[in-house]
Length: 103
Image (tube, rainbow, N blue to C red):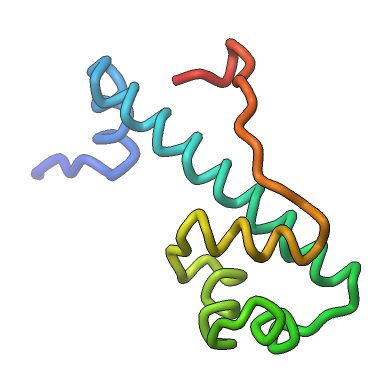
């Protein structure tokens, strides 16, 4: 009987490669960072009792772009994120990572 490797077996093997592990960690950090920013913006929108359509009108973008942004289906520019943050009195900042977070 032929032995079939599962995805998880392959992934475990891949983690023994330092280059793979480093890239994997970098992508996880990227996803977590983007998720944190998007979730913060969506919470601010909800706290302001603003609909997605109202937010779109405020920043002069297509409502579909706001829906995509807040459902992780979009890839907004840094400028777009900054404009949306400003609506809620927020700004984007780059802060040093803790040593445990760095890739």
